[in-house]
Length: 195
Image (tube, rainbow, N blue to C red; front, side):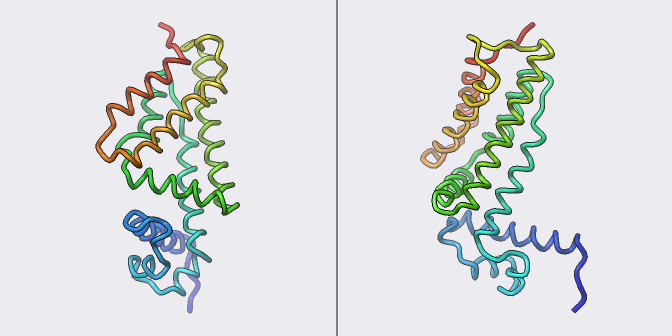
């Protein structure tokens, strides 16, 4: 059998991840079996195991892909930073998105690889937000409220986002307006734009 090129391998891996995502959405991580994922992807178990040694490995890849988007967090104004954070973490947040995020956290309690991947993502997103805050501060576009540091501001913003994600597990209605207002209140509590 001829060896597949890198792009074909990447596309097949992504096809499996997409199929797994649909199964996780429908049945949760624990309820979705490797057989279900294979059926959804239209592949054999052997084909799946060629790309991923386990269902956990698929989850790790999903977490890693999510982490890559955090590197793009940047803004030239406080309003733009608020919009980026809203779009990246909160816009259109669904019950399914929240459930999968919380399932990953739960799995991470007993799976060291998942735990470390989640910690890496949290560190990556917080570093990017802190860097954006520090850039706005250095450019004289914002000031910190009550001598809050950029690190403390990032922690407060991140805590709000995580709390909002957690709440979406219980609240299935569209909460974009409420989430946007909560984010604005959280950010304005620690950051102030300069005119």
